[in-house]
Length: 109
Image 1 (cartoon, rainbow, N blue to C red):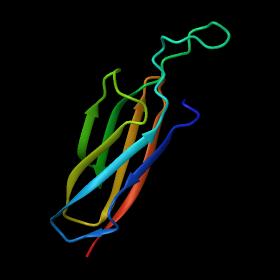
Image 2 (image 1 turned 90 degrees about the horizontal axis):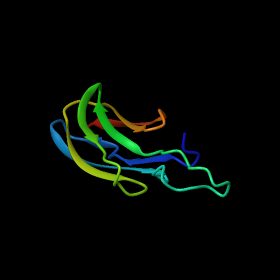
Image 3 (image 1 turned 30 degrees about the vertical axis):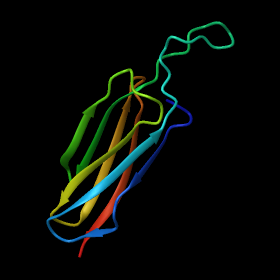
Image 4 (image 1 turned 90 degrees about the vertical axis):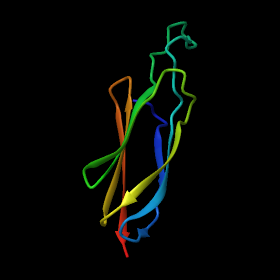
């Protein structure tokens, strides 16, 4: 598990029923390639975010497979249609088996 991994997401607090909102998601993550050596001369284990998903009330909104060439701190911006109040659940999957999650509520006005 990356020690410094920190999810950050921006979701509007409310929307009108049927409105399309813009979601921004970033995870602070160093993305270790597995090709560098540490100060002890041993290879540093690979640790790369390889998948990102976002669900709204259990329904998938976005599912991205991330390739190894991705930079550190991967950022995604996308639109989602909000039909009902609920929660956006954001999930990042790491090569080392770690899973990072964040949840943000949204109300329908």
